[in-house]
Image (cartoon, rainbow, N blue to C red; front, side, top):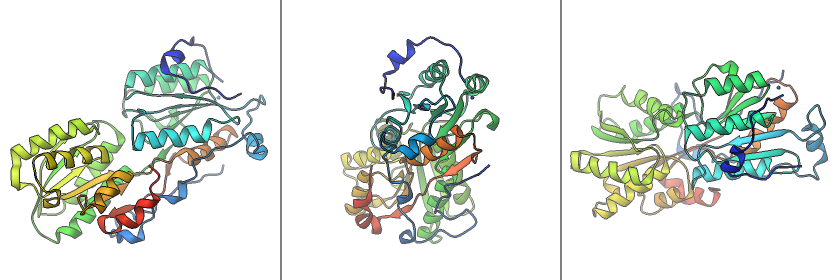
Length: 362
């Protein structure tokens, strides 16, 4: 019998006990590798390889049979998300729940609430529940070593979704998500082409400190930009992927650097919305700047269509449920999976936003 999707407080009441626990496959990204020139935007896909967000049904006897554990029961799968917010994170949660919350799985979902301690508590509860597989979207990379060791000792297989951890790779089965470093590199390559040698000053609104997306996008982008003598990064500070914090930080940037700013980079679309709002509130035309964002929500595509207020969006695909299910099935069957698995993603410029907007699923 499948589980309800439980609130954390109810799950936290569970007592702590113990837990029971080669073909390789990779979901390679369509984006070009770092030593190649970035392709024209029309040559990138929209991530349509991972668009089926439906999971197994009780009528799908073949898949249900293949998902049985050795005891004959439905696999006990947990998903502990980062935070059940809006936009990208909501799309990830919806994709995972739509895939696993079926009669084919004994499924439990926990909202991580953007809190490291909440995620640790949920991990311990999953171990207590004798989970076969724990899918975790970690809030940060550091600090999970002890609970991952506890899961391994108890026989629980841990699979990372979206973000990574800094712990030893032996403590988890694998990871599925975006190549954040490559996202940053491709954003940098596009800007190099756009600038064509012209001097430009850049301000960056980074995501949450220590998050895989923040680290990868920062490192990849800076690696490309630092090779060019025509770019100067005036400032890059954290706004925690948060719209309100992005508004505050952008106001600070405007007060400090004024018309010296040429390029605004935001590590996600939510912060991009905050930047646009601040500019509008100050009666500044967003088109006075090159504005670049990451994620690929429908709303940012609308901004790209709307007089090109946003110039570039590097997609980060949140529809990870179906691909996660394929890998979870292999783990349950005792097969070895790749440690690193990428989803298909694209890079979109304003000139293709109108065509792509109807395809956005989040």
